[in-house]
Image (cartoon, rainbow, N blue to C red):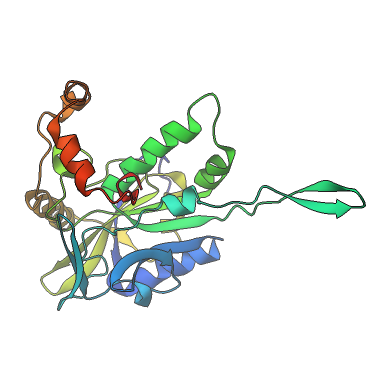
Length: 278
């Protein structure tokens, strides 16, 4: 179709055609990373098939609590969010930049050619997309960008999956950062299981996304299907276990509470695991 690149298309992928999405990403040179079950948790790892996705699993999360639960559902993305993040693929904790080779009484320095993987992130939640945007601001937008991060980030193909459920510790609805992503993605999917039918409403967000969808069986979304996707997001927003009060004044509120006793309470039980900054 002769469609403007800037125009967002709303399309449908049937469940039976979902594997074609993964196959087409691989054929396009991407290594697909998505949610999978390992060690009693949903983690992000390289996948090759829709069978690698956490079908029939959901998570129960709360303050200091995380566990998986088996459910009678065919949903591919029926969980809330992974305890991991995408940061390890964009900003790895260990990289080798050079090597040295001994030569007599001295040595020579050998540069290390770093492979820049072309990742396709499948299953990014809206809040995670916002977190990546903050990383972009810090690591790419300043006068001294991190070139490793920049090279990796520019290669990423992002497929958001809008949340279908909210968790006990979720609060994105009050921060306007979810549960539905509005921009910053190549494709955004909403999974719908309704009236015996299983499908995905797909919103294109870039030229790359539009091009990929042209190679996958799809159809235009109708009003009923768009309404079903909207209900999924509304239901997730209604399940948020927490809310951020006066989010627009968060910076000032924090500045006014440097010495609040809450910080001491947190410090008393902090394990210094760094998970809160991951």
